[in-house]
Amino acid sequence: MTINEVQDNIIEEFSLFDDWMDKYNILIDMGKGLPLIDPRFKVKDYLIEGCQSKVWLYPGYDGNIISFTADSDAIITRGIVALLIKVLTGRTPDEIIQANLYFIDRIGLRQNLSPTRSNGLLAMVRQMKLYAMAFKARQT
Amino acid sequence: MRDISEIRSDFPILQRRVYDKPLIYFDNGATSQKPLCVVDAVKEVYTTYNGNIHRGVHAMSDLTSEAYENSREKVRSFINAGSREEIIFTSGTTGSINSVAFSFGERYIKKGDEIILSNLEHHANIVPWQMMCERKGALLKVIPVNDNGEILFDEYLKLLSDRTRIVSVTQASNALGTILPVKEIIEAAHSHNIPVLIDGAQGIQHGIVDVQSLDCDFYVFSGHKIYGPTGIGVLYGKEKWLSDLPPYQGGGDMVDKVTFERTTYNELPFKFEAGTMNYSGAIGLGRALDYVTELGREEISLREKMLLDYATRRLSAIEGLRIYGNSANKISIISFLLKDIHQYDTGMILDKLGIAVRTGTHCAQPVMDRFGIDGTVRVSMCFYNTTEEIDILGTGIEKVISMFS
Image (cartoon, rainbow over all chains, first blue to last red; front, side, top):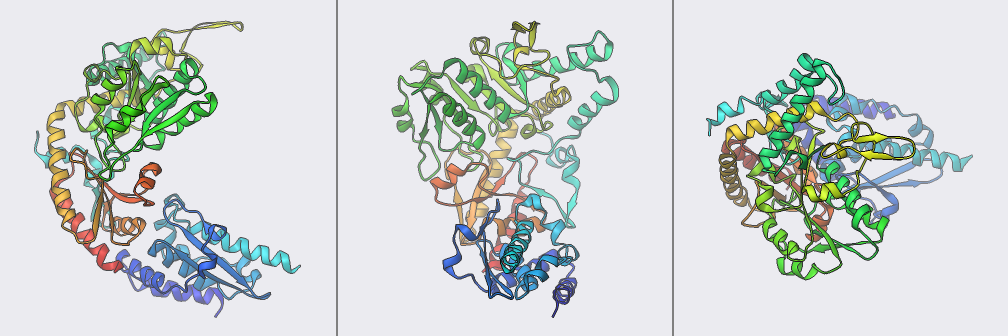
């Protein structure tokens, strides 16, 4: 599946629920199911500082594709990371750099999790793209 | 006290819904909602008599100056200060403390001097002192707290020494709710001739404050936490200190005579009010203090005690809920955590139920460190909250527990 196909699937899944409680239940389930980061990488170097909850994000790179693993001390945040990983893991650096993550707006995450909430959603996206750029730079 | 539903109708925002549920506002410790009379008072400034204060010869300037000075008198009366010269308008508690820390530091602090704070302080009553200490080579000394979140008074007495220059403590902890024995703290400091600043940001809205009876040297608070506008606050200082301290900021209106060689300063309180002040905010604050006085400060205090007791009973009955701050003497704040659920998760779900709480460290990281946690969920109530809202909160918390376990 392409990045956009995965995004469309997520949008469809969230559209089944009108109530925010149900949407949060999906996030919580995703958070619980997130492939956990290797404890070795749960260190300051891989920490994305957010005001409210901590997020660790590790990019594995095999020279071709990037595989992300992550963790957070808050489950909802873990659910949000899980969503981002679902869309962006197993992609080439170019795919990640060029990805237009429209699903964030479409499922109402952005207005609900605005940057002022300091949940680090935008920081997470930014960090994933930065890793992709760094790996791309290493290739050339 | 008036009927609660009638009181609630004074606050337009309490009528609104959020996520299609009635708004339950339990974040009063961060900022309080405003009664319509306060909003109207600010609106009236700009729609009927706006002019810059203390400057013009014209009617608008006179009317605004008069309203501004009336507000100063209202503040004076509200905290029972001895004179209007002792009431300085500032941008808020943070502005007030920065002003004292700077001016006091410039005048009195030398290398090796000590400042005493408590472990319960908000960052606003830590960082300005820390900055001053770095400049002057002075040291912060911290009064420790016990597991209930109460300061250890004996330890405080031990910290007082001939190196202590000032004690600056909060009247009540914004993170845990503990009310500090400020009268005793002040008496002990004064027996060593040490002045005391009381941070009243979480105190003034919950009961009667009489600065003369407390005998504090400085008392500071914010307008927006006592039903007034944002961006306005108060610095009360005994005249002997304010006369002696150098001004914090220079600018217009705070001067007597200016030449390029030398400037002499205006008299109190204007010496500390540089530039165009937030006069609409000050006027709004004056109206807010009237409102609180009309409701009855004793009645407010009693009602909030009732709400605190009710909420403590309701929340304590929830299995897996731990309350941080268990002093018998608290303002209407309950700080808690649920099982191993992150405070952010709890706050997000409560928000979706229409319940506004604060989560995180509450700008009081040293308090969190003391208890070995990285944050709590804080419910901060005030008189317009109801027992029905507390019941809905209780049910909401139970829902959070079921969602995350």
